Image 1 (cartoon, rainbow, N blue to C red):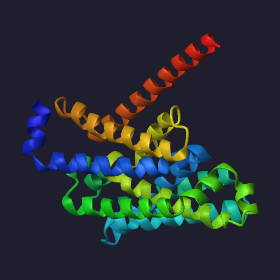
Image 2 (cartoon, helix red, strand yellow):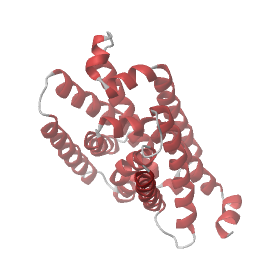
Image 3 (cartoon, rainbow, N blue to C red):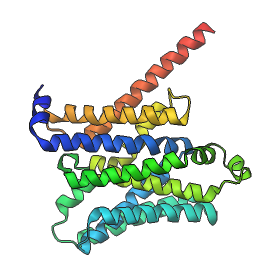
Image 4 (cartoon, rainbow, N blue to C red):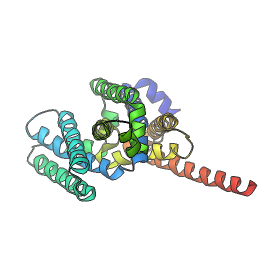
Length: 277
């Protein structure tokens, strides 16, 4: 009741919930592709490369999120081009971009006066500080992601499950994979304010992994993942309010709890089915 009363009184809590739900939508649409294609480590590299873009933007006095978008999209295209076109070893490339992005960000942020508070907000999330202009930015990113997924859902599914069949059907496999990586990078940027760079990968994958226990199609997986992400966002804000816990980290912990609960229920269901057959 204390949280509900504060929610009705304070606009920053309403903004935080809206940001969490918008992030849940982006995670729900893109997270299943990350889980199905098993590219979570690649997503982690993109997330850490974002720090380099934000550090450069802060150093030159530009908006950090603009630097984040440029760095995320650039890292996604670079990983995709070298891995898909040049056929270089993807694991070494991911490690290089992961470390280089972090190093570039740390160097530029260290040379930027008064960076400490700004850095912490991007590393660990600051969902309670989201304002209306940032919410509209999240709406735009969600709209771009949703439009791309809606228009290219079938080609994305084909590429995700059977690249050879998609190529035989005449689909531009490399272009679709690069576009999918760009959408992943935009989702990473969408989650920065909610969970921070340190926890963004968990929030992107946990609801989708839990949804995969129950959904029979990728579209169903998207719906369930969006629902679970919304529950994690609302539940994390509610749990974190009274004890004054970090909201972003609490949201991720709720998502982890939902995943573990889903895993346990799935194991119980499989055991009961095996006993009856």
